[in-house]
Every structure is written in C-alpha cells, then in structure tokens.
Length: 210
Image (cartoon, rainbow, N blue to C red; front, side, top):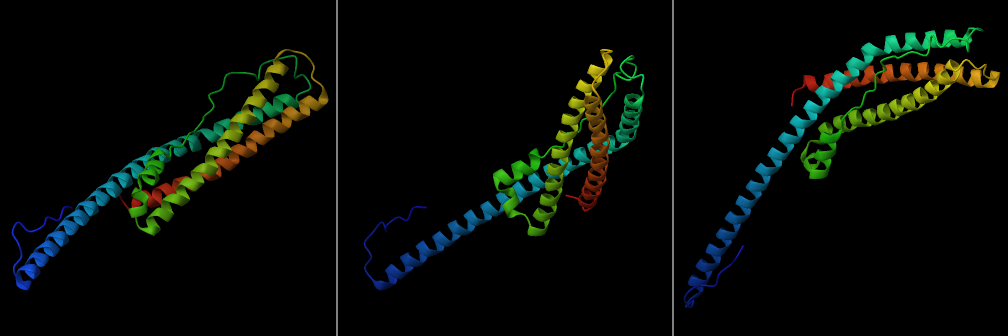
C-alpha cells in the first residue's frame, strides 16, 4: 500500500486533519479488503482440502472392505499350508506350493499430507483436525502391519520353494517355516481388526458430510 503526500501545500490544521482522515480511511479500507480476500481464500482452501480428504477416505474405505472380504480365504489357505507342512510326506510333493491371489492393500494419505503442507489444516476447526489425525494415525499403523505381512509372505514363499525341491529339510528349518506361516495368520487377524476399526472411523466421518 502506497501513501501519497498531498498534491498541494497544507495551509491549516483542518486541512491536515482532513488529509490524515482520508489516509486513515483509505488504509482501513485496503486492510479490510485484504483481510476479506484472505478469508475467502482460506475458506476455499479448507473446502477443497476437506472434499479431497473425504474422497480419499471413501477410496480407502472401499479398499479395507475389499481386504476384509479377502482375509477369510487367505487364512484358510495358510491353514492348508500349515497342515501340509505338518504332513510327514512333505518334501516329496509340491502340491501346496501353488499360485494364490494374495491381497495387498495400500491406503492413501496424500490428501491429508497436502492439507497439512498447504496450511489448509491450520484453518480447520480443532475437533475436525483431531478426527482426521486419528484416522491417518490408524492408517500408519495399518501400513506398518501390512509391511510386516509382506515380509512374512516373502519368507514363507522362500520356505515353500525349498520344500518344493523335494529335498528333506532340517527339522529346525521346518519349524521356522511353520512359525512363519502361523505368524502370517496372526498378522492377518490383526489386519482384520484394523480393517474393521478403519471402516468404522471412515463411516463415522463420511456420515457427517464434507
């Protein structure tokens, strides 16, 4: 904002006060317009961020529900593998080392990250931000559990591939393989609990509307 000096000399206190009043009013109007523009910008920023977060949660809810539907089949398959490993004839047949459509779920948090980095979250109500933060913290726990599931799956594949060669494995390696399969079952049960928790949290927020 530029404040210009009077175009002609000031000859009285009255003229000075009028000039000062005009400058003051001009500054107040300029500040008011600037504040209004910033307020409108912030509201649009929050609105867009909220809509993106809600869409992200809809997509994530769909993903966790799909994973919930897949878990029973995966646990049943793991129990079959465990039974096969316990079979004394294992190592002479690769029947159980078969193709299986495992589900890997990756939940997005890009909209929440964008809201935080652009400052949109700072203009939201504290209660609203707290709700979002709790959901995305649960997603972080879900992601770390899914990573553990993938690591265990890899170890299990390596073990089953060794079995498929037909070579009799040492007892300690067989026991380790069994523990890996049982660990995968436990991890899937943990993921099921997290799936249900996230589904409830998503549904609660989405029911309130953006």
